[in-house]
Amino acid sequence: MMNPLIIGDLKVPLPIVQGGMGVGISLSGLASAVAREGGIGVISAACIGMSMEGYERNLRQANREGLRNELRKARSLTKGVLGVNLMVALTDYDDLLKISIEEEADVVFLSAGMPLKLPEFVLDTGFRNIKTKFIPKVSSAKAARIIFQYWQLRFGHIPDAVAVEGPLAGGHLGFSRQELNDKSKTLEQITKEIVEVVKSFETTHHRKIPVIAGGGIYTGADIYRIMRMGVQAVKMGTRFVTTYECDASEAFKMSYINSREEDITIIDSPVGLPGRVIRNDFVDQINKGETKPFTCPWKCLKPCDYEQAPYCIALALLNSARGKMDESFAFAGANAYRATKLQSVKEVFSELLAGYAQEHELQEGLIKARNGPPPVQLPVSLSCSGNAL
Ligand SMILES: Cc1cc2nc3c(=O)[nH]c(=O)nc-3n(C[C@H](O)[C@H](O)[C@H](O)COP(=O)(O)O)c2cc1C
Image (cartoon, rainbow, N blue to C red):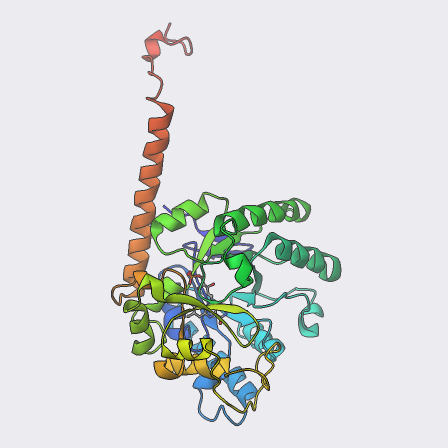
């Protein structure tokens, strides 16, 4: 029942995108499983080399090798659509973008910062012969407008699609704490505004620019409701964490299953953004102002003031992916507490499709009931049209 997602010449059988989750949460295992079911499976490039031997000595090189390996591994497991999530704030953003393009990732999501600069090796091509589609992730219509206008003006090219991320998402959030408390800043409201922004660029460029919405989408009914607002696909992270195929440790997944609604909370991450996490002792300690001294050999994130940071966010996230939950926390969306068991990605997809179909039927039924019974069809012999009279 769901329409495929079309991004230029790329056809994705189902309009469901798995959000990239770093560090080490969405690698080839989860991404290939989602791609096999017809969605877009996304590998997170953030500090991906931390799962490689010897990353301490040269993280940048480990990241390059790690991303290449994971993309190749995922490709060997599926013919489906695969993407990379690349944080603009990473100091090795250019390197990792180059590898994504060389390895012909179908799409690249550009997140955690405004992708206003593109490396020379991309600009030199004039975007020709690049198979990879570029999709910035934004949390406001203003950001979307700035990116589209800037790209149009400077590069003579606009993004292939845009991903909207609302305030209920997991991980680092593109909202201030004040905005997170503003009840009018909903995914629905932001989506509506972004759909409008995109329309004007569609007209100028004579092509469709799909809008992909995420942040708090958990069920098939959620998908149905948001897609009625003019978006072409959804992006879901939290829902895919509690799958067998997710690349995180068992302990990470269990922290979702054991969480209660009141455990999902916001922290101030050392990179200067709020982040949504599941509360645990580590979170309580850092919220009380405790520090976890570390030395930083890498400087992996541009905005991280590592000399002042109370702890290393990359190490904390690596610890959580590996299951050392007492030295870390789990990034999680507002719906994480709804998980009750581990499932396969296949099961998640069939629940989403069934939930979508059910909501579709329900809403169609409501519309019919509101409009009253359909007009009585006169037998052809009594109608004024046709030759029967
Ligand atoms: C555990 C976790 C880690 C995440 N890591 C990243 C990341 O490294 N970079 C990024 O751009 N988004 C990250 N996200 C956001 C997801 O890509 C996705 O947009 C988001 O999860 C959608 O909201 P949902 O969790 O409510 O489904 C993360 C989300 C989660 C739950």
